[in-house]
Amino acid sequence: MRLCIIGTGYVGLVTGACFAKLGHSVICVDIDPEKVQKINKGISPIYEQGLANLLLTYKERITATTDYQDALKNADITFLCVGTPSLKDGSLDVSSLTEATKHIATILKDKKTWHLIVIKSTVLPGTTQQIVLPLLEQHSDKKAGTDFGLAMNPEFLKEGVAVQDFLQPDRIVIGSYDERSRTTLKELYKNFTCPIVETTLSAAEMIKYASNAFLATKISFINEIGNLCKKLNIDTYEVATGMGLDSRIGRPFLDSGIGWGGSCFPKDVDALITWAKEIKEPARIIESVKEVNTDQPLRLVRILQKHIPTLKGKTIGILGLAFKPDTDDIRESRAIPIVKELLRNEAVIKAYDPQAMDNFKTLYPTIEYCKKATDVLSSDAILITTKWKEFTALDFQGKIVIDGRRLDSAKKAKTYEGVCW
Ligand SMILES: NC(=O)c1ccc[n+]([C@@H]2O[C@H](COP(=O)([O-])OP(=O)(O)OC[C@H]3O[C@@H](n4cnc5c(N)ncnc54)[C@H](O)[C@@H]3O)[C@@H](O)[C@H]2O)c1
Image (cartoon, rainbow, N blue to C red; front, side, top):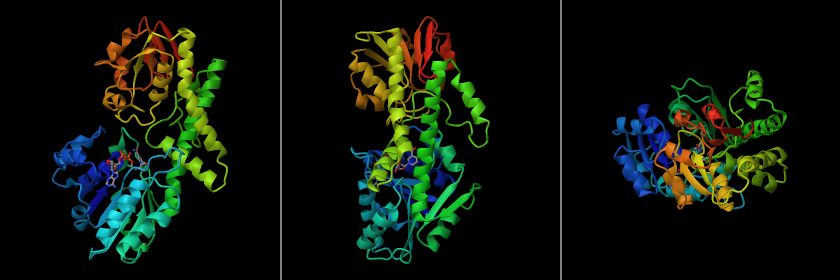
């Protein structure tokens, strides 16, 4: 099929590159000309395992442009993958989505053939039907369900293993407005062997929010258990193993530590809380999930202060700036509140991350960034904030290490303490 992808971030570019691998012809649109240029040269503008290789290998089948007209006229299906960040009040910013929708609609107006528009961005229940659909109809003078199709197909990929997740998902959710949209998307995904959940537009939107809120809940829950375990001298990871073997619970997302970050959980949890307030339904569990997560990284600094009560002038090494390993994404990384708190205490920071330092420099340009992980080891104390594999090879002997991610090899340090252990 001929596919158009609007927005070439983590979701859009992975979607485009994977569909190209599966044999489809893909044209990506982004407002950022630098990204477009890179993609056309077969270079990935973001770090994501396997993505650069896909872009190079399938260069013939995937191109990029800033021109919507150019892209849409040669496509049968358009996936909307633009960002939906949080506004200051926690609500969802759908301005990129509405902007892109209007562009699509004006081109649909003159398009002679049926076209399917699929929302892949994470949007609150009701957004596709109540915001996207009317905009498409108003600006195209066409009717949804007859002149063009509309579907909601949320994405569940995890950064770091996004390509693998896209190609081998646990499930595919297809929320459709009309029958032709449903069957067209089913045809596109026909070679995937996972279950396909066919549903309404709003249920598809809610499945994404409920999934992310549940996963965030699982992490905050185990962190609370971890905080209790630490007080009682119980190994929280043994508890997680024992719990995780219960098939109703499962082991993933039971690693206690300094909490969740990234581009999705924080903004999705915020949007759900704000939306719940708007519709006057209390979201008590989700609110406390956020509360636990806000305090968890600060616990690491409080533990550090047990060992070094006055941080002023002390050099503190930070190992890991990305919100999780195998990505350069620092959005809502737990390293951010930690660095903020250390600077508030006038500590001197030496940081290292294999992929995320350039991104972190945009937030904190003046802290010291090290060329190698070993350069961090000369600090007065070291905090482990992201569990990159290369940190396991470091020699922590003779050091003070406060661990937020359970890096077992760091236990050889002279002084070692974990956030929940
Ligand atoms: N990152 C993830 O792990 C992940 C996983 C599942 C779902 N999601 C959801 O997918 C959506 C996209 O997330 P992301 O992380 O890929 O975002 P991102 O910020 O990495 O990428 C968004 C891209 O859209 C482009 N863009 C913005 N406005 C545009 C416009 N009007 N026209 C064309 N391009 C435009 C931006 O330049 C950027 O390249 C969000 O709704 C997010 O919640 C993200």
